[in-house]
Length: 117
Image 1 (cartoon, rainbow, N blue to C red):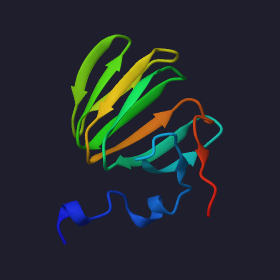
Image 2 (cartoon, rainbow, N blue to C red):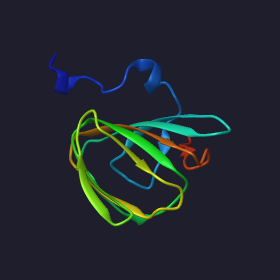
Image 3 (spheres, helix red, strand yellow):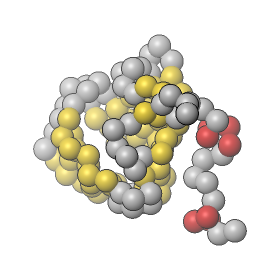
Image 4 (cartoon, one colour):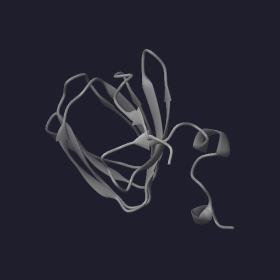
């Protein structure tokens, strides 16, 4: 089995609640506390995320690339690179196919768990 055929996260992370996201191509799992929400996710098909703002966000790219505009400044992030979006700052992204990342949101209620079917 090649690395490309493997799941990007181990089973114990994939056993967490799945993220209910408006991004159809996002497959993710969440771990929340009263203070913050961590999201482990992949976007196999890539996606463009329109400009928006919310509480502070920190993330790390595990695979793929993301062109991220934060407060009007655009930069491309790749594997191993981290980014930080301060509270209330507008940002948008163009995420490449095959993207895998981890984001931590200061807004503990940023996402809800998807209802199991």
